[in-house]
Amino acid sequence: MDNEPKEKIYSTLMAIPRGRVTSYGKVAEYAQLPHGARLVGRILSQLPKDTTLPWHRVLKANGQIAFPPGSAAYTRQKKLLELEDIIIRNGRVKLSAFRWQP
DNA sequence: CGCCTGACATGAA
DNA sequence: ATTCATGCCAGGC
Image 1 (spheres, rainbow, N blue to C red):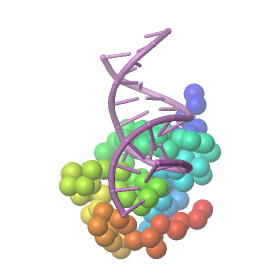
Image 2: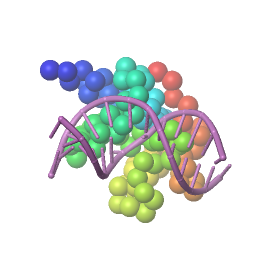
Image 3: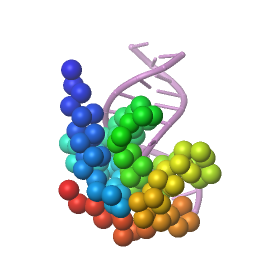
Image 4: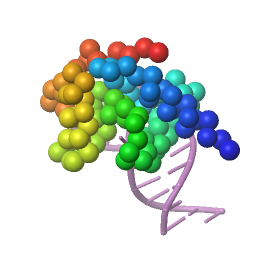
């Protein structure tokens, strides 16, 4: 089967160091999925809740969380990010953390 | 088989 | 900086 993309995405996620974040588009790019930003989102949405992947380190291209502010998922992700020294200011993550290079 | 939706990205007004 | 519209891919109905 063609589970390659999924595995690729998993590998990319695991490759993100602590205290650093990236965007769906970048993940898709490094996972060899051209224009697969939504695919990444799809995959993450289908991740099991007991996953060990750092999905919380994945944000939108503009540095915002992909969830509506105030929602449970948003709060959860923000919490996880703050635990990694990634402070969120006005719904926007610190740009310093956004520069992640493979 | 066609239409709609969604953890996105980008460009233009 | 904000809002609207379009493009892409996969799934669900």
